[in-house]
Picture 1 (cartoon, rainbow, N blue to C red):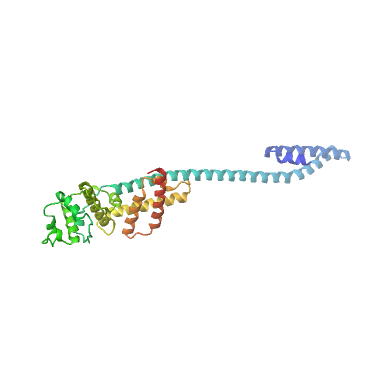
Picture 2: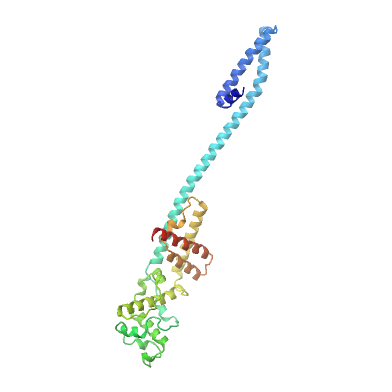
Length: 315
């Protein structure tokens, strides 16, 4: 009996229905035989057997119909869920491709803006900024003598108190004279460098003993001073900086969408590897400079990720 039950359970729905009709036929034949044995006529036996079998089969068939309807709805629901998951997966895949492309495009625009030479900028007003010059800010007096051919003969005439010899002048005045002369003579084309170049420049503190080294020191320290004006309090480049700010906000919003999509475990910086930690540091400076501090933490994390990604990729 147990084996028969297992066999019935493993049959398909169609087989179960066929089995039920077969059982009905067997029961009808059995009822006819019993009634004939009890002395009933064939007509009476058939009528009574039909009633008995009908009373058995009707609720059974109804139960089977309900069961088949339930199975149909269950299969349909399962298929719909599978279709829904498949469509969601396809949608996520398409969204992922769109977001990644937008992320790459935005990163490229940011890099282009940060690495573009500043030739279109009007930097002449930097000359008139109130600066407090320190001793040997650009070069020492000895180095100034080595580079005398690079300066105009009236270099000392550029400062108010030029009546005393330059050798006896206050150190701040000497450095101011160097600043003004280099600026006016356009010894260095400050517009040929990008904001990224200015960010990367470092102060050269070592004393030099060769003319070439002294000239390199003068250029580095001159650019370093310009960098300080550009990256700190200078507010003349609002349009440019606003562009950087808007692109930064777009970049961060796309990264947030990708993280919410959770389509891949790879960090988003894989798709923004053209942006180094230096690029992102400038983006953070511009954000802070314009008073937009809400992105500081996100940019800090992005800069760390960029540093790790660029190091991994050997950039």
